[in-house]
Image (cartoon, rainbow, N blue to C red; front, side, top):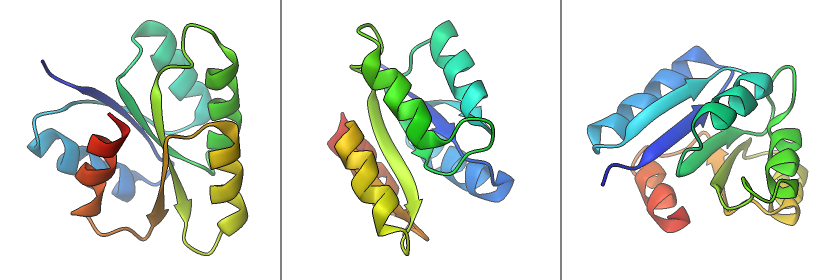
Length: 120
C-alpha cells in the first residue's frame, strides 16, 4: 500500500527537496504552499502524513495543526511539524498542540524518511 504524504512548505526549494526525498522512497506526494492549501487538500483527500512547516502564509502550520486536531475526522492524520532549529517555542507549541513529531530545519535529508516512518 502506498503512503500519501502532504508536504507543506512556503519555500519552493525546500518543497522540491522534500518532495524528491519522499517520492524516491515510493510515497505518493501532494504539496501545498500555504495553510489554506493544506486544508483544501486535506478536505479533498486526507493524507497519511503531513510534513507541515510551522510558519506558512495565510494560516500558519500551527493554526492548521490546531484545526486538524479539533476535527474528529481529521485528528488521526499524522503531522510532523517543520520548524527552524532556532525556534524552540514553535517546536514546543507544536508538540503541545498534538504534533506527532518535530523536524528541525536545516535538516539532514536522511532524517526525513526516519521521521515519516516514526510518525506512521
